[in-house]
Image (cartoon, rainbow, N blue to C red; front, side, top):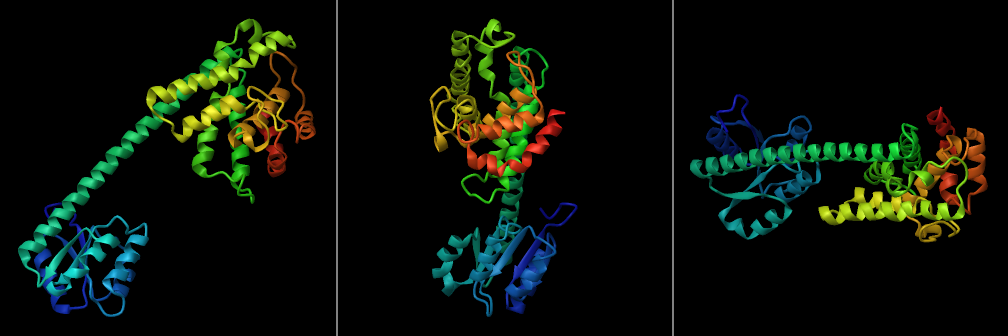
Length: 351
């Protein structure tokens, strides 16, 4: 507390000059004390400095303590700063309102040195504990995020090797999905606009879109030339198998997070078609998850422009022409309209 090399800052807001001086004298040995005679002056102070704790008089002329408390809790810069309110004995009926607005404690006037120091020390210590806890939680979340990303790379790497080695399909489709997400994030249509959090999940989850390929025999997966009908029937099962793999992860981890939800949607739906003739569930229109519709464009473009064991690659122009020709049958027309300006950047990724 007060023994730290850098003294903690306490902002005291009270229209009574005697109270301000008294609180400064009580706290000054252990803390850096800033005094303000009004809420308006305090707001100006807070533009340049955020204290570790605020002591706030409830009854003040001009901006009341309640209004000041609302301002403090409504500003992300000060929302987490603990506020102790100062109230006269006859004002105790207003305690509930102050607590409802976000105060953490109160001190009755006239104040006594022992009570002030004890309450302030307690809430400074609690604030330190909260900050340490938040830091630990953030570090844990960061480690978990790195572990998830590493696991994701391992799984997508296994899929890539099953697809014939380092062909780059997963890296390219992830890049196309990222470009599509960027385009949709700027869409003027609320039904297609994606949030940063959802977009990040879709981009990362897109790496798993073909995870079901691990269960497809090499004789079919890597067969040169077109597949026979019975072989294609086996090939189509990779969507269901991939979804089952994700389902196991969801059940084992008891985790239905947005990332795993997006991964399952992409895996199971990226071969559905807008007109309902796709697989495995013959979904149509907006029944196809948005993530699956995004993945369908990225996956199809790469299959055409980069080719695969079953067909030779075509030019960027041909790939875009085919996608446009199949808009309304294979692809979501509104999505293609929104992403029209993004297709030239696909060529850069392909190159």
